[in-house]
Amino acid sequence: MSFTEDQITRYSRHILLPEVGGKGQKKLSQAKVFVVGAGGLGCPVAYYLGAAGIGTIGLIDSDVVDLSNLQRQILHHTPDVGRSKTQSAKEKILALNPDVQVNTYEERLTAQNAREIISQYDVVIDGVDNFPAKFLINDACYMENTPLVHGGILRFEGRVMTIVPNESACYRCIFKNPPPAGVVPTCQEAGIIGVVAGIIGTIQATEAIKLILKIGQPLTDRLLDFDARTTTFREIRVKRNPSCALCGPQASITELLAYDEPEACAL
Amino acid sequence: MQLTINGKIENLDVSTVMDVLKAKDIDPQLVAVEVNTQMVDQENLVTTSLKEDDKLEFLFFMGGGA
Image 1 (spheres, rainbow over the protein chains, first blue to last red):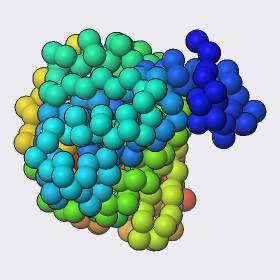
Image 2: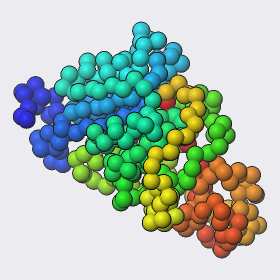
Image 3: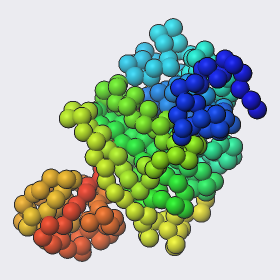
């Protein structure tokens, strides 16, 4: 595949970078990224990946746009209230960059469909808002050997970690199991400063681009925690956990677990 | 004993990781604990002793995304 003149102009600021160049831009155009959730994190991630010329973006979400989403879910506009989030998001990505192929899945990611879908992508982005789904994504990515960029946000805080299966610590190396239902508040219950979703989402998108280009140091074996109140980032070193039930030597999780799925918090 | 907890130096009258959780009123179900970059399994919180200048990280669940 070669670039048209318009594409060379569109991606010129990338192509100028020695670490990207024409070759790197081509890698981006051939890459497939799966974004789970078209909400607070998924929107900035998918928007920037679309702008960057990622060839294929998969978007999964079963929800419709709610007025309360618009404070942070920047791909959805006021006239989109009531529309499917994946359709709304796809429309904006294509308006920004018609080069991108956007695959939409108007459903929830489940133990039944997760591996099949993830196996079609190179990188996965966690943009979901509940723990069962975060564990499901972590486990499915490990089983499919697909790098994952985990993200979480709440109130004024956010967190990112990149997971390269069999190389770096996974989510279960840190958190063994989801917390009991209802004890950790969701954004719907506790609130979220909208811009924090943008900050964390754009870091996730950056990680995906780095993984595709194989440049720099991925955010592996490190949890990056952000606090908007003090504008501080804190990096916590983590290691693969020898007692991890998913990726440790005595792993006991060999198939996806179907957790009881909680009510979505306005994905 | 002087400990570094989430990057801050604190003086606490404790001997195990569980003592710290109790002193800070933290539900052990809601936190992952790292001592000197090693994760401590939930079942070992009571038996994991601390010493002067240990570095603890309390990692709380952060589940939002939407």
